[in-house]
Length: 169
Image 1: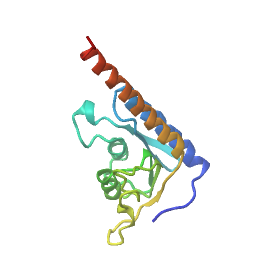
Image 2: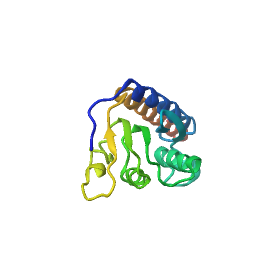
Image 3: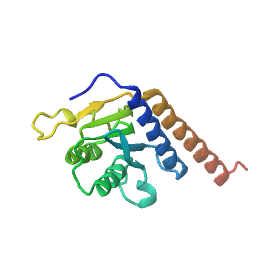
């Protein structure tokens, strides 16, 4: 089920997710951040770490879900909301559905791997035994611009490294 309107509180939690994304950037990871909230309190955070951890599942959402489950002592997270700066992929969306989140709020859409409507929408599959509400586009411009800046800088650094490795004689 897709919700239509974001609240000021949604924007506040998304800003916290952007702060987590900065941690990923600082490590050279794709800058995606996530925050899990229960009853108005942030209970867990996460940021992308698949490169550094050598773990393809170490996406921001999964890291935040793991921390929330540990804190609550339960692999199910009923009543929890997850805020993430980039539309979740299939893997992360599946984990969110298994965790029984009440709601997922994301920032920028992902036209290549987004599983909340951009490529497909796992959350709108009526055959699934749990329904999680989703809302997209919260601080989408800020989240998208953050990712774009990261990739521009990364391409610039790669081009500079190529120039240094193969100087014109």
